[in-house]
Image (cartoon, rainbow, N blue to C red):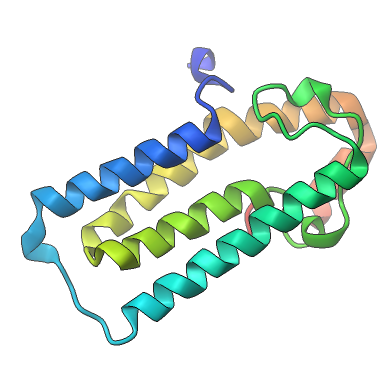
Length: 153
């Protein structure tokens, strides 16, 4: 299973997950729902996604470290300020928030079953390998950071 570690870029996985959700919507239209304010709810998730993603990327640029998810060994500094005080993975959280927004946009509750697959895959094949590398690079500083800030929220 190590062969999948760091192989599928998170944005590609995000797009594949979004496509899978769209297919679920098309294959099971009988589950469509209508909620009061569902577009507003979707918009809140999209806005949260944009905020988390943009602030995370800005923090990495300020720290002059890589944002390349397939090369965690290229990290030049440990970022733990700003949004990184709340979540260790705000860029991945941004993808998840956008997928939650997509769930409300598609208006099919079956898509709620797809979201955990995205999270489980990201944890196992992206985040855990990144954390192993960051522990090698930054040792006790990263270990302390892991203890004080949650992986997602």
